[in-house]
Image 1: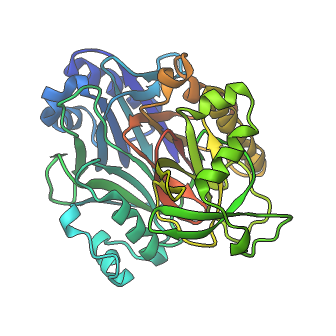
Image 2: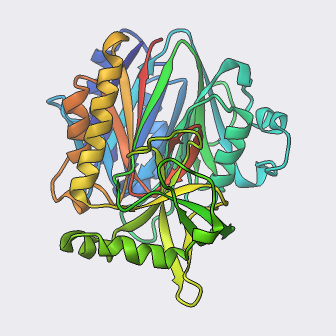
Length: 417
């Protein structure tokens, strides 16, 4: 298996494509089997020309890609860089012997109802669950029905990893762009809606790191009353006892006030604008820490009832904990996950390539420094070609389910079994 990536920041589309192709060709022993392209909105007027120009210079049987408000790739000195405000094209290509590559474009209208049987989703995608496919998904943020898509794919392919992001733009008024080329399949090369993706089956392992960048505060609680996305009552989890005692249940706003009182002045100030709630995804795990929670926004409170609306459906019995996010926490969270991954991989083959899907709210906006997340990735997993983009939302697993995230960096790491 071979992966390589090249990035160009030339303001000319033709020059940028020429540069990435000239850098990629010497790194491969033959033509690639698969490519994934990320391109900044600075080239938006030329988007219809991107795939034809690229294929004139490099034969790629399957190619997907999207526009991004920022682009991530490998510079000429083999360091990963994040280009957030200037033109950039990042192209990753791979030779994947023993891997079946199945590309697809899915419109929102074609998605089955969520109560449809799994076979309906399998027929839509065109890949058997027995092949244990791994999915890369690039979605339009407005027309893809991404949450329904993820729920349906998890239903039909419960053992498969899904990772990706929502296309973005660096300026207002620029439409989303999804790029698609499959030599053996009909279809246009530029879409403005839906989802483009690939299912990879066979001699390949796809592993993920999903860094949500938050740390828990206060105690662990259990939802003892709620409806849809509104928490009505919370009960404290004491000494591992997770039975719901409604007599001790309190309105979540009252609980939150108590939590805030325990914080230092700096965290109290942070809670004014960077307070979130984490929902535990593993119902059976006793000791919970960073990485065990799905981080969701707090959408609002009802001062009269003390109820709290959150950015996801909740149900009684779920465990929750309030979280804070800042640059230090985001850095520590990612470093902890990378260190853990590195330690786990000491006994297996080296990764061949990686993709990074990072929120538009990270990067220099969060850290005040360039190339932070990609640089940290390279510190722990060096010499791995990295490509990616800054997303309108990031797709990655937490526990055994796939979610759409915000303020997250999700990494897809590819290696042989």
